[in-house]
Image (tube, rainbow, N blue to C red; front, side):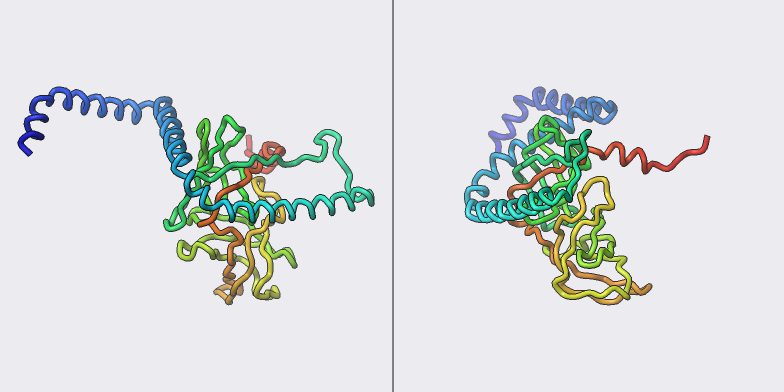
Length: 275
């Protein structure tokens, strides 16, 4: 203890100088928007770099599950391709020359950090602005919807996941197209609530829940989960318990979706202002 005290006394000018420097940088960041944005991007990159390297061991131990998910996704894509070829051969698909049939682009990414036990959970990906990732892009896995890009730095991005109490998703019952709002209650990481479904709608345990498409972010028909229970709430609406298709504790690989027409849609849907 005496040695530590003598060390502090001996170098107290250096520690004082270091403290003043830290306070000065803090004041500069707080008072200047440009420096604050740069500092946030820098810390996001540093945090992402650390998570990326620390996640290597976890990814190695999950290789068997990763291979299983990739095989399932490949099988799904083969089925979709076969269906597309059948429709094309029957002339049921018309291509648009100006877009050559493309409405969305998909960017693969790896999860380098993830949380499921908080009220407001986020996922960190190893792709950022340098890879074309921007805020408000959809994020999915082989098993279904994951969330939306919340913030992006040069090489990393954070995702506000379904397991975040601030997140709302427009979802519908696949068999009848009745749609509502899906949200997480902050309790079980495998379950969420679908609301605003009228009481006269016929429901069954096991009914599939998918994205409604009433969004500029998510395409229609992406898997969200299945109905695991329901009860009538006030106002003649159901409270529907949905078992999520994505197990966030095992989330390793995702795809980031960009809507190529999002700017046109958002501009069209803006409310008109009176002159």
